[in-house]
Image (cartoon, rainbow, N blue to C red; front, side):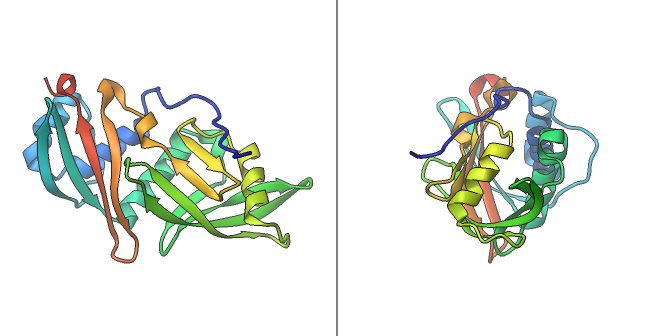
Length: 210
């Protein structure tokens, strides 16, 4: 049976880390500052150097591509772990380098064991993100990736739009099941870790920009 258990429902609540992501990406893009003001998402914070490749209006919505890099995504992801999952994800860190690395500790046979999970990101046609497990380091234990992911799935309390599929050895980040306040949506567009090129689309519905 495919293990795609979703845990606590947090996808619909107002997510400060995602607003922070948009703030960090947009704060230096003057052409769309008025959008940030309209959405009340500007706050004090460090500026992030990004580029905007294109802005497309379709069916009353505004869709624009943002370009960022591994360092900025590292900051945003770990901010999410600290502020949104708090105690549920205490002690875990994510580092994006040659692969996406998740590090922390798991309880295995009654012992806390340090682990490192190394995953290759794959952008899906629907804008979701699949993190395919390549290898796992689990202390002195020699466990297959599928079993280690099943243990991880049992011990982590993830939002329902982030799911671990232990049988097929990947983690799915289902952006199409997540939206911010005002129904702002995200879609992954490109992740090239070797070139340090990460791109995503932010879709603002018509009601959000009025």
